[in-house]
Length: 125
Image (cartoon, rainbow, N blue to C red):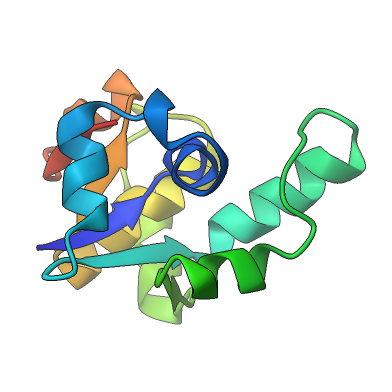
């Protein structure tokens, strides 16, 4: 299974894995699955950390590498799909995750129920 971690799922997986639902934690940690982290999550973390609204690892890339999470770049195709999505969800970071899941055939690991409106595969975080 190819997983795309929502930002909160990423932070929990790195710092507080017990916050994740047991099934999500087991699926993320299963070496047969690929866990990806979007560049949009790194952008969201950097912005919120700068605003003082988030405590997150300073060395995000190193933490991701240690956890064997693969980076997922944002492509023009992702951007075009995100821009064309219906406005079920107004958060641009989450809309990009939905677009990436659609284009790349990924399952999003999240607790955000607004993702269900897009019909993408979800794994409850």
